[in-house]
Image (tube, rainbow, N blue to C red):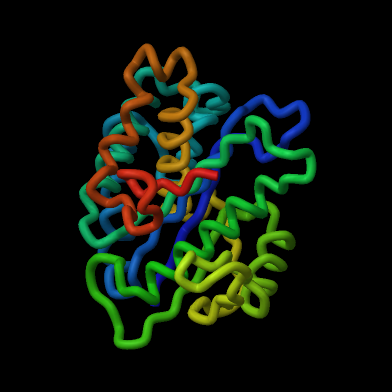
Length: 255
């Protein structure tokens, strides 16, 4: 069983949106590595507690950590950035995980373009396809299944999308098949997505910091650019799911 922990960065709206891009990142981990990597994240959090006073129960929500820290304002801004960089380095050292990334550029999209739906549709397809083609690194069972564990937002919409894709998932034919579509339904994902509050999941927080780094690569804030934070995503190169898109050297699916 593969678990995909998912979070987003950027705004999914088209009209009056403050962001040009919407980024979605899925961190994929096999059940046989789950305990090992959770323990590593717990150890990481202990180091951050001892070094910076970040409590184990306090959430690493990357965008807020930089710009709207709330109670975490007690930690210097530069140290908060160090926590984000250290978190990315920790994730990058996990050899048997894989990260699927979706970027939607909202420029010139038609008024009826559903950014959230399109991004999630692409993410689900890549998760399912990569699993069925056995392109994820690390351990594997003979007949794998997957489960999606997103941050607790837009639950009903994502649930309905996955249910639909199990029955109807039209994919345009490649040239060798002629014109038209094939209905390639999603059959290897079990249950509805299991939504969790990111405050209670270090693994969803890991997906959050990846999505944040991806967004800052696309459209860095002045502070992140000044501190070279727009280059943090490069540190994840070794664990990117490059099989997700042959059109991008890092496997990023661009819509």
